[in-house]
Length: 212
Length: 133
Image (cartoon, rainbow over all chains, first blue to last red):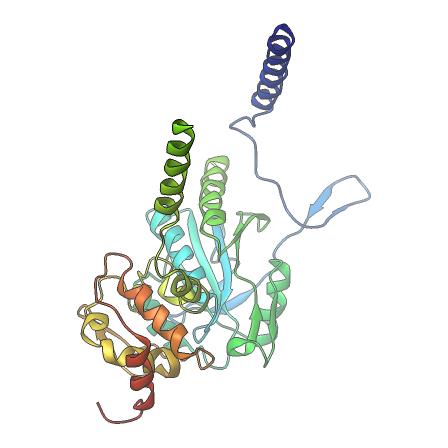
């Protein structure tokens, strides 16, 4: 009997130790989101972070959207196509969650790239935007030169490939990417996983607060 | 001894209450084939994808469902007063029983109570898919 109570006491002691150590490791509120991707160190010791290169695309209202257009804002990016029979609607529903939450925040915009440059014409993108009931100035659905769209997908660490065997003719990931005002990638979410996107919403808030 | 058998009974009852989940194959098939567009909660997506939850179209067009699921559908469709015009791909690989299970799942989920479907009706409907409505 005595040995059991000793055991229980020891167990409780260890448990409380473990719990308290976890608590003390809790992250402080002011922790910044990491800058993701490869980095280089220059000869004089400066770090060069992975940066989204200059781009120029056209949105559903025929506006030219470049890195200059988005200057001073953070943005959420993804890749999709309209006639996508697989994961796109699911991802779009999650993107809609982001749109709804930050609709009134002028420091954040959404940039969705169509990878089906042949079929997703500007009128098609416009009709799609209307069906989603979204505002152009908040959510740009862009198209552009096919090679440029596919190569910029790499910069966002997103898979986008033409594959005739894949549903709809393209292989692509449902990844959602958070980019800061310096065009550094700061966070990801899997657009097919609502829990991942819930966490991502917090990342967005954190980044918005960081920039204040 | 008496307590033991009571306990046993309790566990058995608990097991059946917790595990009672009808239309489980229908749900698995729905989650795999349908939920990417119609969403796991049947809510659809704005004016792009029609909802299934509490959808009048679903309620009023029960006989069409087997052909819709198997062969897909094209052209405008009004659901709960909203016009949708997004093509839906059919799922040719589903058999009668699977289609029946999906229909029963969507007919009894998300507040829907649109009655039971049976395999005989599904089979019959599929034999007359291309005939005029």
